[in-house]
Length: 124
Image (cartoon, rainbow, N blue to C red; front, side, top):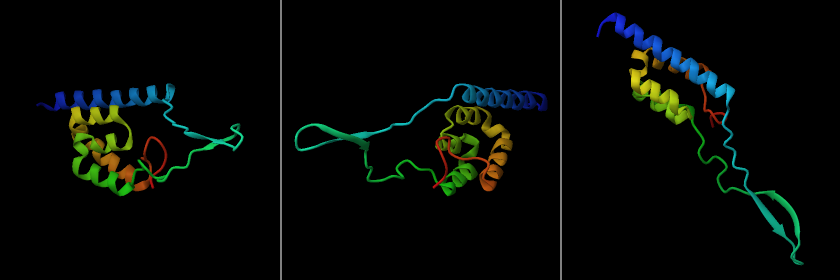
């Protein structure tokens, strides 16, 4: 592969990443599952609706250490992006080999300084 072909692939993948980020910003996907439970009094009338109590409130939480390790060892495959909730960027990383390692290096720095986190919130 020549330098010209490599630069074309990197340019295409960066433009694709920018486009995906713009689409995600313009059309956010709401995935909140607000579970509720109904409390029924002894006379069979509904008193109130309160949020359901979850046994594990951190179920599905993401840790910064796991994201760093995935990025460090499997970053060229985009596994850390899948883990953080960015599947389209994960596919871009998979197809471009992490942008020749450049995107992986950027993601490592962003993870270390706190600029990259899970799509649905913060790290635990």
